[in-house]
Image (cartoon, rainbow, N blue to C red; front, top):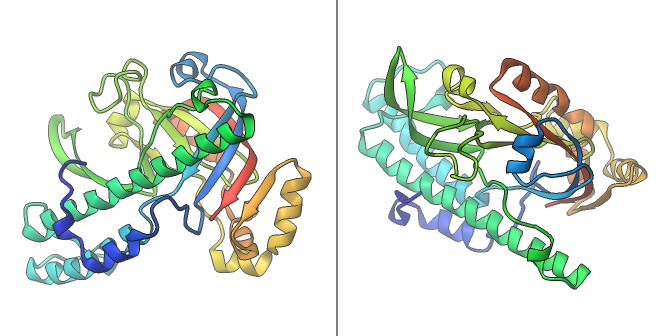
Length: 307
């Protein structure tokens, strides 16, 4: 995002981010080697580079790490003051905000853009090392494997976009948190290679089930500001998962199903146990039936790395 301005980022955030670029982090972040389980839309799949069942893919889910978290914390305090300054009434204090044309909002947008760019750099660094790992194991250049980037998207981002509101095209702030973009065909924001069909929509599931590639649609532009769910979503809090599951048992269960698991700790595995999440197939199916992102391909994990 070209509007990024590091002068709007605190030195604390910069210190936190300095050593973390190229790392997954904790929680639900992961690196998975997957295989294509089923192709539902061959035309869109081929456009995205998915050509056959059992094709190997790699999915990386991580963000702006402590850098972005600190930026959020810094500006949340600023926004809490702005709420009183501009006499804004909120149903919940966590919805703290400021009018889009104010200095507070402009400063935040420029700082947030830094976090977005950091997140892209983070995933690109990991992607580079994934390619190097494949090269080392198979003693063949990575470009021979077809390890090209399909899509890289942020799941927590605010952007100025044009959408139809009350019958008119208007510029609006669109903030996707726990959501992902699902732009249909023809939109200039969609990469040229995909513009004729719509953008790829990535829906990660839990580490023991699967993930989905969906297709952005024109209907999403009409009913959801070009958005759909960004993943399976939790059914159980992390603390509840730790009370109900043991990481070692989760690891054994996954390995019995043919999945290699590497995690920073057993606690991480307990937090991310399959039953702690919604059924990703049902989540993708709802999106498909509503028409805000449609089925392209289902992916299942072969190897899972947790930060």
